[in-house]
Image (cartoon, rainbow, N blue to C red; front, side, top):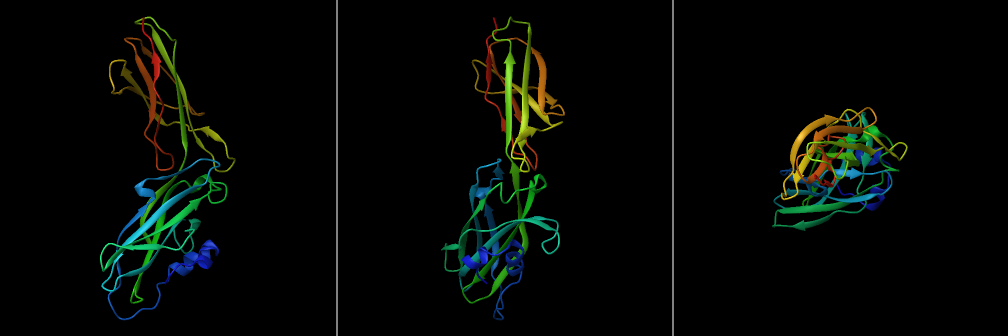
Length: 256
């Protein structure tokens, strides 16, 4: 079975239905998929407007060689009845042989947050449907060979004040954690999330965590610390399955 441009242009349900059914083949061993790679192993992060094109690939082997491969990302609980999102390849696979029996077939997937990601509920874990066809016509297909994350872009700010400040006085660090909303195309505060306040001495290149606080119901951050020495203050968010990690630049405070 092979993906062609006419197939990729069809509806998501039709494409997934077609890909889920292996082509008829001779009574030989099926090809074996050993690896799939999505976006270089990184999560796919989308804001509210800009589309993103990511590379996907499937590596497989067969005694006769590998002729074709396909990958589709889908979201939901079940491919047949519980799927509520699909990301389809925009081209035909290009297969590069690493030996006479093994090849990696690569495709590209364009993700447009205003077209493909119309619900915030689509953020999180996506399944990877993967399949290959050998040169002898035998094929293998998995509804969910692996998973990846499609995430809502996060933003984080920090302001440490006053600047300058007397040694032993109080420094107040404020900020806000927000993330893309795929439904109204804005950025809104991410509530009750743990964020680290970190400090780096002026003479150092390493940040250390001073305390961990939670964002408010509107995503804002506020805490206080004592001024000890010159240095940089920043907030750092570890991320979740739906939202990527983000860290601010350091805000310098001169301690007199």
